[in-house]
Image 1 (spheres, helix red, strand yellow):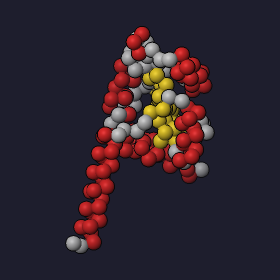
Image 2 (image 1 turned 135 degrees about the horizontal axis):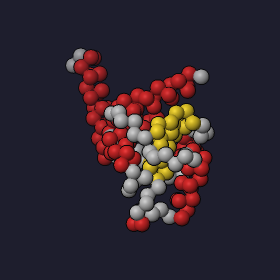
Image 3 (image 1 turned 90 degrees about the horizontal axis):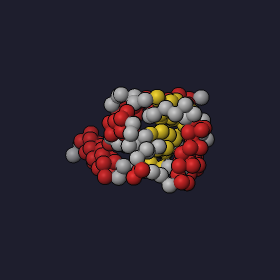
Image 4 (image 1 turned 180 degrees about the vertical axis):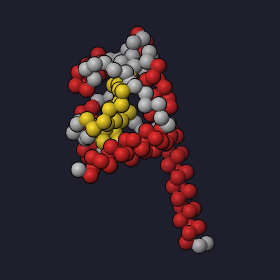
Length: 158
């Protein structure tokens, strides 16, 4: 086997592994920003904070389905981001615990005072806002990943 063929074979194996792991083990979404900051600092990652109304906000539901749960975004996020969701469901059956609601309210006070849904923020590990997306970005998951990567690359260049 030629060296070039070996490299292609290894690349295909790695890509298959990456796709399988992101399909069956999607990145974990956190609900506590302080814990996410600790992980981000330890692992040298950025934080993606998403404000959603999971049971009433159509654009939130579409954003989650079309971008945030997509394997292309998951593969990118798994190595680069710590994901945090601040959900504000309205249906009684989906209500959060009192403690979780307080955490989400604190996040909204700090990062989403105008109550926009969906609102997605890219934060440094320390919590500084680098970029925000209001509403559903209405792009493919791979394109959204590239947008996030461009902001991260620009931040690292400073």
